[in-house]
Structures are given as structure tokens and as C-alpha cells.
Image: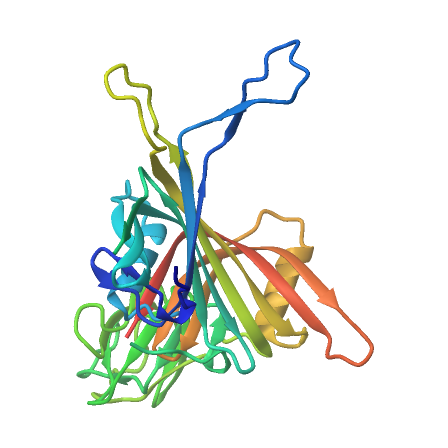
Length: 133
Length: 222
């Protein structure tokens, strides 16, 4: 067993590392579907729907960075989107990958000791795969 | 790769120029277009229809009639269209200084832009290969945001936003530019949608001016 430091994490989007990257989150869920039959008194029973996954990527805003520009362009452009592969990396050999669509970008500029930041919300379309070696 | 400090940001109701624009070549009386450059120095930014300017030696104020991104065609240059036509009999000289009226909102302490595309599920049943995970595409974008200011109704730009908020008339979209610094911006048109003004003992009176974007939000990054 081992622990993983968040500071070793990175985010690859369409084979490019996201510049000025700060952190990522991945939220994989399967909606529960109740299967309890009428008359059962011992407890509710459930099965699960197929998985759906969302995520967040946070960085110091730099549209001059190739990966950040590609992520932002996907959300400001109204064309039918082309998903690209993202790797949510704990390290170079341990990561979760999926094909993502950017559903939201929130850019914040604030006076004081703050960098201008951007937070991308993403939706994984299709399966998430785990690489762990 | 670069980081950008919040303290270098600003917001404007209109365009913004980073550099010192000069006329490129002489411009004749009656002309309604001209080319500007930085006279050998960097010239960046976005100019919006409605921006106003004067030219050295000519007291007439001119108004741009179309949006244009500086450097979009040739680095450090921009072609502009304006009205009225050039007034002086001798036109404008080559390298005449061009002064754009600032559209910056005064007393800005922060801004946010939030652009979204709703996810639309495309997962479909299949007799031969049932889906193993949900699939999606995206709707067209929409955007909204907030400009946070220290309240100053004497500032023409703050006043323009607040006056639009309190008026009940059919709104006219405002040109908006949200900048990380002089050369890097996000721009589009907005409708002010709410204003939250807070006066608290021991603090500067602040206003959160929220808006809905109408049309595209466009990055311009030099």
C-alpha cells in the first residue's frame, strides 16, 4: 500500500499537459435503482444504473497554454463538440482516463494576493478506465 | 506558461487598447476607414463598435462602427471603420497619434466569467451491445458573470450599468471586456441582470453587478 501526494498530480488533455495546473477532481457515480419488492420487510434492495462521470480541473488561467486553450475553446464554441481524452493523473503511471466534454469554465479575477484562476467542469462521455502500474 | 495576478485585471464597457496607436499612412478627407499600428511598438487589444477616438490635430470625435481585434490579420496593426468621415481638409498625417476614450469601469475589485454548455445525454438502448457507460454531447454555450466594484455612481460606466438595471425598458446589450491585463481579454456583449449594493459599517460600499452574456464570449490572448 502507498499514499499519493496531490502535488504529484497532473492533468493531460488531448496529449498535452495542462499548464499552471492546480488540482483535479473526478466524480464517478452510478444511480441507485430500487428493486425492493412489495411485501419485503427485511430491508430495501437496490441495483445500479450504468456509470456517469463528471469532473473538475482548476488552474491559474493562461489561455496561452495549449491544453487550457483547447479546454476553453470547447466551451465557448457552439459547434457540435469533439470529445478528447483526458488523463487525471496521480502520477505518470497511475491515472484515470476518459473522453471529456467541457460543460463550464469559470474564470475569476480578484484583487489582492490572488492569481487569475480558471475552473473547468467536465462531463466524461463513455467509460472511465483506470491505469495503475 | 504564465500566471496572471488578479490585481492587474480590469473590466470595460467597450474595447481596450494596449499600446500607443498611430495612423499608418496618411488618411484623406472623407475617408471612413484607416489602418493603425504601434509605430514599431506592440499594439494589442480589442476595439468595439461604439468606441470613440480623436486624432492629433483634429478636434472631431469619431466613433467605431464595427468590432475588430488588433493584430488579428497583421501583428500590431488594425483596420478600423468609423463615422463621421475624416473632417479636416488635409486629412490625417502618417503617424498621427490616435487617442481612444477609455471605457474602463472605475473602482473594479474583481470580475468573474462563467461560460457553460449544458450536457445532453445521448446514451441509447442497443439490442446487440447495451451501453456500459452514459454518453453525452453538449448544447450551445451561454455565459454570465459578475463585476465587483467599489460603488461610484459618478463613474459613467458604473452609472450606465446601474441605470440599465433600474430602467424597465427593453434592454440594449452593452459591449463588455474582461481583462487579465492589457494584452489579454475575454470579450462579448452583456445584459446587466442584477446589482447587489452593500453598505456595511467599517467597510467600503461595494456593488456586485451581475450580467448575462448575449452571443459569444471570445478570448483574445497576446
